[in-house]
Length: 112
Image 1 (cartoon, one colour):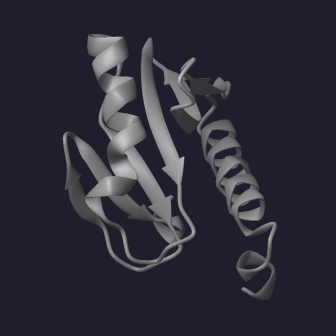
Image 2 (tube, rainbow, N blue to C red):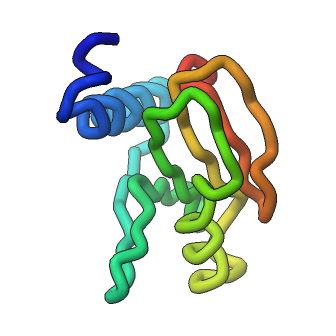
């Protein structure tokens, strides 16, 4: 908890989420295909999971209070890549799952 509040908090949280995704997929017998996405303008999605030919965009946030604005890069990703995407996720350290709009759901880290 203390480390996440420091200057490396985002990197630590992203690493924890990546590790959990790799562990979960591997245990299901799925070869994890993980990427990131960035536009020339600098919009980025932290993690993109390729599964069954579809792309799952995932943003990792340190705030335990999810807000619709946290989904903006996922919305851009979905618009750019169209039907190759599935609903996105904003993973956060809080306790609540809720829709953020545009096919994006806030998901607590503990629910990965």
